[in-house]
Length: 340
Image 1 (cartoon, one colour):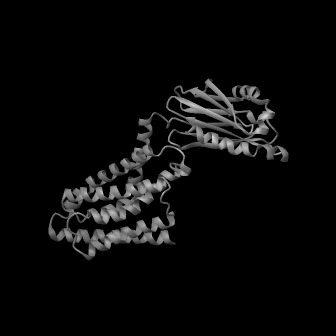
Image 2: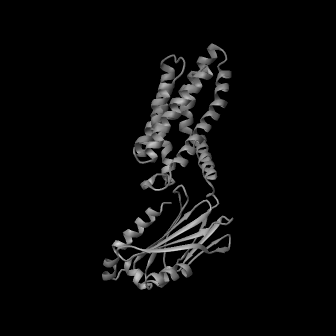
Image 3: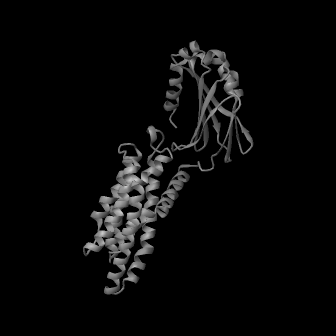
């Protein structure tokens, strides 16, 4: 998590400090906690009116030490370093560094709101290094504790492995994507054509996956999902209408651009790339690699079966036709369902 983003959030609060004081607003503070590889970084931001109420810089320093309590698996952890600074509007910001010891159950207890105006609230956010929001809650005097599992947050290699597995899982449970590939592969007779076809699909969906995740290309799911279903129907019809020879890389590249937009929803739902927050290179590359591994694994299983079932020319034509009809039926069902 970038320190600048935390300061920006706190600055937004500070700008409204004077107005809140005049209006007797109970106030809102921000507590932002980042889980890093070897440490936990907590940044507390108070507006100008709240900074006066806690007694300025000295009172704020004591407040952050006494009113913020962290523990891992029941073991209290204390800050190894603390820094405090003020801004031009009189707001105060405190940064506390905690050594990250072994443990998965992080408990954050903040009684800061009890030292401020009645009704004061505190926005607590806990994030992983890649920007994924692990927990976010509004604290008040009656609810001042949050419990979060941080076992999924490890070193960079662990984070990469997590998104790699997520990519594999997504493609293996993405029946529409798999059926599209199966509809394409059923007509191929050489491994070279299989590799070219899948590679083109991978290159294409990688492009739109990156564009959509970073927010450069945003197309609503209500448009993308019917298009994915339509691509399945098209492949089945093409199988029946003409004799497909050789690699189908042009077809899979074109429709791969559409399927990549569907893949991107997974990362966007996890907060990767949203509002420009968090690193996206590692999650994006790892997730994409997982999708590719899943695709290749499925192809390695399906293609030999297709070739065995169509070992004779006559049986190959009948099987390919029957399979294509099934592909068209499933794609048509999804198309109608997603449009309606």
